[in-house]
Length: 185
Picture: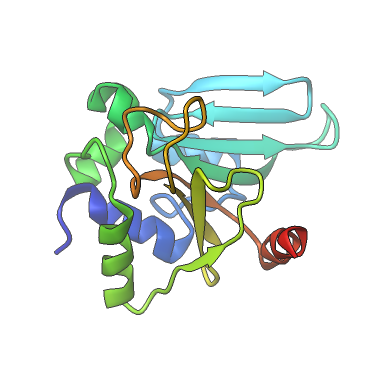
């Protein structure tokens, strides 16, 4: 059995879900699973984010009279290193299921666990953030893992080390990966 939060991260990268929640799930469905303790942000009438501390879910819609459509989720793993672990995990759902979350997630450890399960991570270009961040992609689940590549003043957090996971996001589609590859030639 994978200890503590590592099992959570392996589940997310393998399935492309957070506790079974897909990036396309409705705000009501996300609240049903993660609870009502979240910070909400609405940007105009057409974009919304719910911040559960570690997990953030995003929705958009064509206009105020249309339903919300799930866009993506991001795990803000970096928050665990610079805030109290309990503050970063504002809901109990993840703690009950996975236990203690460590302040840092080492990419090498996550990659090893995934490779052991036959789940590859492919490095993809990250032209907007290179060389400070490197991005690794799981094509089947469409999950991207952002990792500190090198330190840069004002570019990377001081409380993370090279090789620490910064964030995990889904979906990152094959079309987006091809677009990134085309940008770097």
